[in-house]
Amino acid sequence: MSYLLFLAAAAAAQEQRRRSRNAARRRQEERRKKERENNSSKGYSSYGETIPYLDCLMYELEGDEKLAQFFKALKENAERAREERQKDYRESAQDIATMVDNYQEGRSQIEKKLTDSGIEVKGIDSKGYSLDNFSIVSKESTCDRYTYISTRATFNGLELTTDKLNNPDFKEKYEEQKKKCDELRVQKELKEKELSRQQSLLKYLPFGKPDRRLQIAKIKDELKSIEEELALEEKYRKEMEIFESFTPEQRKNIQIYLIATDYMSRAIDSINKMAREFRGKLPSIDEKDIIEKAFNDTIAELGLEEADIEDIFRRMDRVAIRRNRGEYDGKGTYYEYRSYGLEGRKKDLVHGFVKHVYEEDPDFVERNMEEVLEDEKSRDE
Image (cartoon, rainbow, N blue to C red; front, side, top):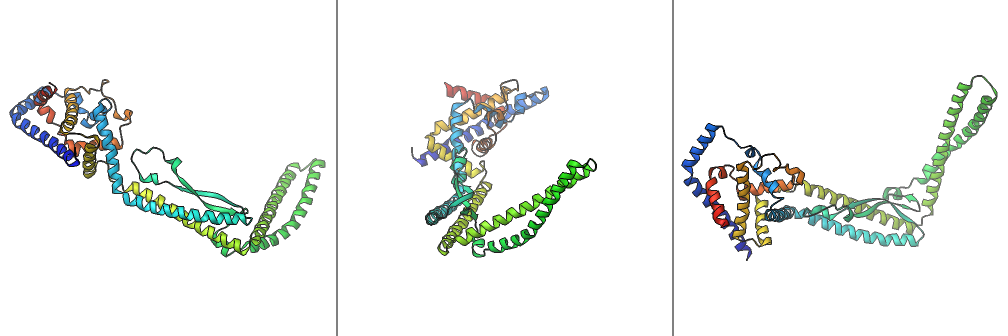
């Protein structure tokens, strides 16, 4: 069956429903008026009617295989339609991801040159992206499909940026710290002598022990601070020596490596920003054009003919009939649909289908119960 014939079948089925309903309304006009008057005078109401039709339909989807199959396919096609509306984001992200791959390949070649020249390159941070974030059709967790790129690195243990490479201050930092520590070394010697004296006094003198303990603790803290400054001096000395050991050729390759890394980091940020915008601007799954496209695609995918579509509508009518009879009475037959994992976009999808395709008339079954039951009986026969 061609695609155009599928659409014609869908239109025919919907038109048949409209004609049947209009005819039923004309035939039942007088009886409808009397039934409403009778029900009103008796104060009649069914508990089941207080349960929304949509909730009853969501519950029935779990037990009706044909409806479940239809709405499963409808949801996937609706997700594809939503995704298609946002394809520009994915295409742009794919272009950037290709650029990242190209830079990664070039950076790997530079890293090999640095390694061969005696420099150990070690990544110390990374960023990730996944093009799966631009797809919403039947996707589970995508955390294992991320591509991670190191965005910071050390060279023989020294972390560099393009700014540090072009404007090095390693020697200045070391000399300034050394000058500071030359004075601290004198203080350290004096404080160590004072600490030894206070510890001896604490041991041999019986009075003033609490104050002496406080004094000893203070001196120890001061010595600890001095040691930290001396350790910083040593750190700066090693960094200066490592940087000064790089040859002009090595510095040139490090710069190329850093530029490539910076471009990749920004590109990954752009991809992730696009992914957030992609999801934030997705059309709602219950939009009319999304539902209609998904319906047409589902007809083609499942090979539905006019009779199949009518059968789907009849099954949905049956839910309305059961609701009208009070079978969803809250005594065990009806359960909160959330316990079946049917909330969220799936409920929105069903709502959209009911609104834009099925065209639910909440009073139709009640007004035309006899006609609907007769139709059910004749079709079943």
